[in-house]
Length: 140
Image (cartoon, rainbow, N blue to C red; front, side, top):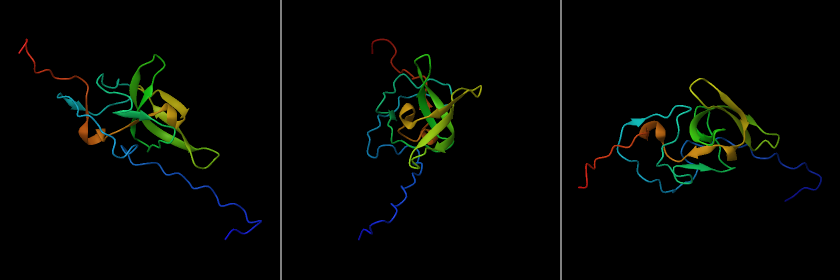
């Protein structure tokens, strides 16, 4: 029952999601063969990655402190970054994030979730292949 004159309930507080869980059931293509590394801030995402498959931008994405993400850089490339901190917006249900964007410690501050790409699988245990090994030698 609704009581007239009662104050509205407070909005639910958002809680950052678990890494790699932006879209449950999303098909993630297998990585090519090659040396797997942990992506550090400033390293370009691999050329075989496709937006919407290996990384996804969505205004509803939420991130953990220390989570590896991808972000567009000013020169137009997509590179890895790391979430440093977050701030709760005035609506008490969404966030803005500060990121480390290169090895020198440069930061992007107050970024909204739709400007940050969520990595769609567990790169902490899987790693990322930056240079693909080719096994084909010649025509056969």
